[in-house]
Length: 235
Ligand code: AP5
Ligand code: MG
Image (cartoon, rainbow, N blue to C red; front, side, top):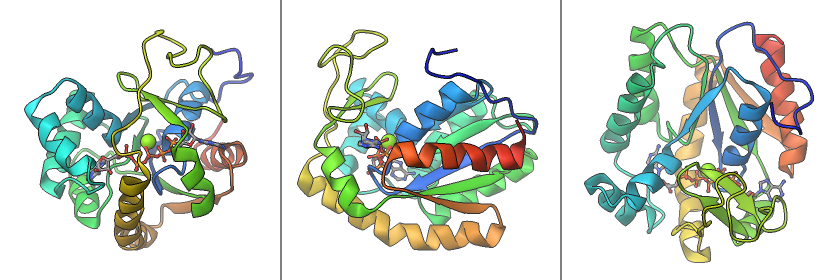
């Protein structure tokens, strides 16, 4: 267990969690913290998977890059096929699995395709949490963000800087800027998010598993998120 986690949290029931939130709201940051805190948990981030495909210059990566560089969402069928293939390959399609999704589903079409698949395996989502962070807070974070593409680890020069400037803490490999973290593309991503988020929220509110956690920083949000999870899934 990492030194900064005093007491690991053990869940008594399988958790299948989706994190929603604007670009830069901290989905990746909260995911890393939850993975450290809850040993049973595993996660995937659609954005991380796409960045790995871009790095490896695969056909899919080349196609994804054209959308990502413009701050646009990939077509629903393409991303749905990619992620559902991963879910199956990871062995997540079973009732006992505990996992977290970051960045997928993003639209109601993706959400209903996922629901259908999960229902067939008796492994439906059982918690959807929206990270609600003021937009003004988010904008200033992005300029300072650096990522380690292979692992998806996220750094911020002010909030959580790497131990050695420019290098990943675990592997020592170089950190990079995301191609969609420019002010112009970020604005477009926020617009896309604001278009798709309301219908998606409505979709999950209707399913009765939706909660919102609000706060200006990830340090305020994390304990609230963890409390929410332990209150529903046991400690
Ligand atoms: P994706 O990678 O999912 O990006 P996103 O949703 O835009 O979210 P981000 O990763 O930018 O933000 P985050 O919430 O993870 O924040 P983070 O923790 O890094 O998607 C990228 C693209 O892929 C999309 O635009 C789309 O083209 C495509 N795509 C992906 N999924 C898709 C789908 N389902 N359908 C179609 N297309 C899809 O935090 C942000 C920064 O803040 C970091 O630097 C962090 O260190 C810092 N930070 C965190 N907390 C604090 C704090 N308390 N104080 C200061 N800084 C902080
Ligand atoms: Mg992210």
